[in-house]
Length: 121
Image 1 (spheres, helix red, strand yellow):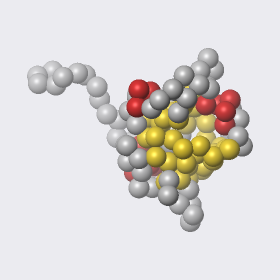
Image 2 (image 1 turned 45 degrees about the horizontal axis):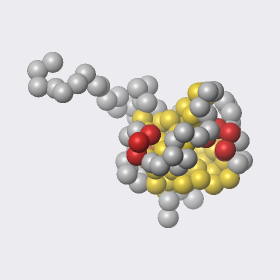
Image 3 (image 1 turned 180 degrees about the vertical axis):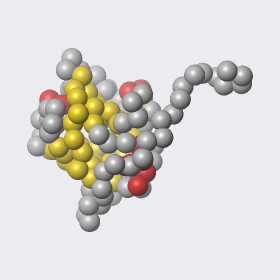
């Protein structure tokens, strides 16, 4: 309404994940986009902010399949094909994926698995 360009509403959800002494956070996969391998998580923008990670920064995702550098962006177009990107969902959580590649398969993650996220050094 009025002078707003669109009807997007930002959900300001509080932080829910504790930061470990080493600076990492333990994140859970809550759902998958099975056709694409996108990881829906319990991570929230406030959690990333508490860890000193802001949009435009990179963070490390450590899982069974390895350690991956992820851009905290706004859309898939923020990264080249095959690179990792994370961005907020309409539900107020963070989705992590690979642009035109299978993130869940690459990281060897499925629903209920946990992995760690930490600020890139």
